[in-house]
Image 1 (cartoon, helix red, strand yellow):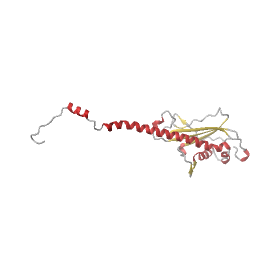
Image 2 (tube, helix red, strand yellow):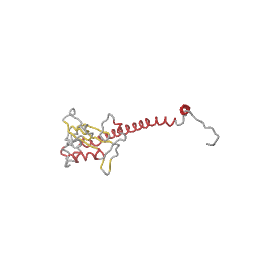
Image 3 (tube, helix red, strand yellow):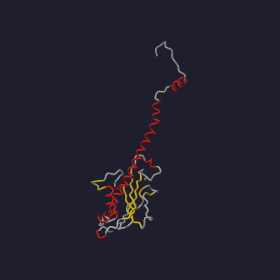
Image 4 (cartoon, helix red, strand yellow):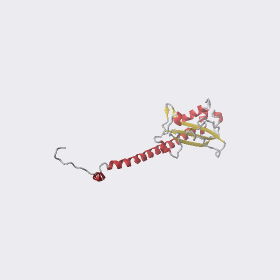
Length: 205
């Protein structure tokens, strides 16, 4: 400081009053308080919309896939399948398309993310859906996705498809069925009686 100039002192109370009157940066602070809830709300809307779309798409894909079971065409085309797993794999192709020419789907169609269950029921009243997710482990229930019961003419069939759908914000799964890794469970079930197709066509079980 040049010699001869007096030193100015500022009391702490004056500093506090000066800071209280200073509004510089207030808009930035207010924006920071508002932007986080807005982004979270936007993310929730997008994720819920995509999940709903994927669920509807899964319903439509299942109805398309089981149409051949309804008419007996699927039973005839896969009568020589070596196992239940082979039949389920063929039905999954009806749902998602072949590996080289997949059907456009909103839900995830990866092999480990889609499981199907086909069961024959004694009556419509006795028709039930299987357990899909083990509540203790948060993973696929033991045995789900391995059952295929061939539907004879006039049989009552229960077909269930379940998809493990990855989501960006697992905390939005609150109250919904989900896996331990945060993926959302999408499920669709259809119950129908097969047509009395002719067993002599090679479509019988």
